[in-house]
Length: 171
Image (cartoon, rainbow, N blue to C red; front, side, top):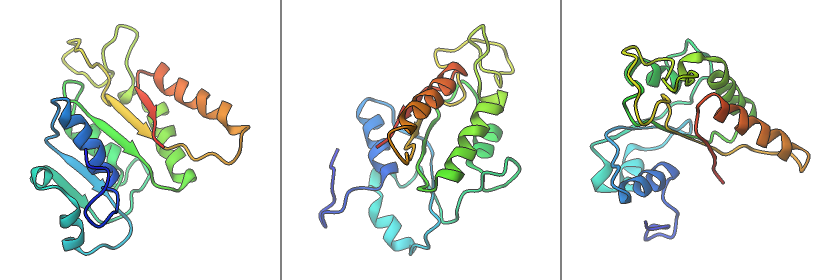
């Protein structure tokens, strides 16, 4: 995976993550990338490799942690995907308050959890699958304010994993 583009800028994180999965034989059918900073479409298109453009959905608005908002990406997941789909989420908004509201939503909304029998709570046909969780990989850059917060961060990731959400640190 090229870690930088010809102009020495690193690829957007969504591109880097997607290319990593593609190298292991898991190309993505859909990539939803939200960006609050107004960006010219030409600039965004130039940053996305040709082989990803058909799958790339660039949404140039900020996300909204309100569970009822159309700009809450978890609503998109809940309304259009199920436990049989491979769903990868990378959360990095650079706003700890908003990020933690999304994490709380994952922890509180049972539709994202795996039940004791290994079936995702949102799996309506009851069939177990090799990836039971609605979210198969959750990458999260947990912004910490100091060393004392490391323990809290570990506890947060542990809670996510206990709910069946495979949570990974993103740095």
